Amino acid sequence: MSPLVTHSDGIPVAVETTKEFATPVANDIASKLLPDEYFRARLSAVSKNRTTDGIRSVLHLEQTPGLISLLAGKPHSSTFPITSLTFTLRDPIDPSIETPIHLTQAELDEGLQYGPTTGIAPLTEWVYGLQKAAHGRDKGEGWSVTIGNGAQDLIYKAVTALVNPGDAILTEAPVYAGVPPMFQTMLCDVHEVETDADGIDTSSLRALLESWPTDKPKPKVLYTVPYGCNPTGMTATLERRLEVLQLAREHDFFILEDDPYHYLYYGSHPRPPSYFALEKDQPEIGRVVRFDSLSKVLSSGLRLGFASAPNVIIKAMNDHTMVSNLQPNSLAQILAVSVLTRWGYDGFFKHTERVSQFYKAKRDVFEAAMRRHLSDVAEWTSPEAGMFMWFKLLTGENGADGDSNEVIRTKALERGVLALPGTVFFPNKRTSAYVRASFSQLGEQDVDEALRRLRVAILDSR
Image (cartoon, rainbow, N blue to C red):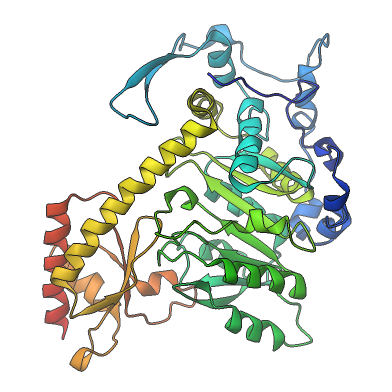
């Protein structure tokens, strides 16, 4: 088992003020960091008006050696009916090998009790190490991490921290269907940014921003899923990423980098660096708010994700957590960190590589069935990451573009096939000839039958 790393003072990251995240900053990095005042000025009105929980804001002090705490109303562990927990863990290299894991009493006690708002110290420290190993980002570069009940929880809190009702925002289109409702609930002015197989169309993004009305504030955020995008499966190229970072500096917006499929990349070319990694070498540091998820590589039921972002933004998100759900699930965190620390980073990367190859094989099976059944009635680009196929139906007269909505919602469903029409993934609900299909679950026979039925539905709609 890899040793657990803790803060030098033994206290988990606190949430009261940004100074508690401070570590020495290298001169070359410090000169590029956007100051805390920059971020504070861009927080939403809700975030600026939010007050901290008087209990949770000092909860970390209970870890001070020699201190007797009369603070929190924590249930006594002797009243908890769960007295032990054992599970088996697959080897990250050879899944046929399983090792029994028995939580220590200390681990169980921590998992059954209230914990820090930011997440338990062993897991937050593991995340810091992962961001160093995967993205080359060190502590002391003006950023910190927080754990959430899934990445969706954290995305919502970041959006709430940065966006006011009526603000203009940018989102790639098509886009993950779970995000537009956040912006719509806040009555945001949503502007779609076109994408293609190489990622965000930066020429159209530049044109949009350079023609922005002078009497209207420019967008504060751009939302993107850069690897294996849900729904398109596209992975943004290095060139496009660098262009987006440049536009973020020129037009002063944050990049919300939602990256649940980062470790599900199986493309033939080397995986391009993340926005979070690339930012370190930019003239300014602090415009990327990154979201990771353990759902696709460890367990979706654990509901664990983590955000890496400038200190002021993380504090605003933690202040939100204090008054909403208090903290991420303690037991889920203990289960996750007991796995991750036993694997170590090498084991984690070997596990995720095996998972990515699993989905590559799933993609290959699905695409082979598409070639058999849909090659003359659909067009697509093979995804390089993730678990979705995005394809255009040629449903109009003489095979012209049409609207997939009727075909998928009516004809296909009548024939026993459930998928999603492209219109679901556009905030403006525009007509779309595209369809999103997930290939993560089905076996080869079910895939073949589903696409055979879909072909019948397409031909019938003509």
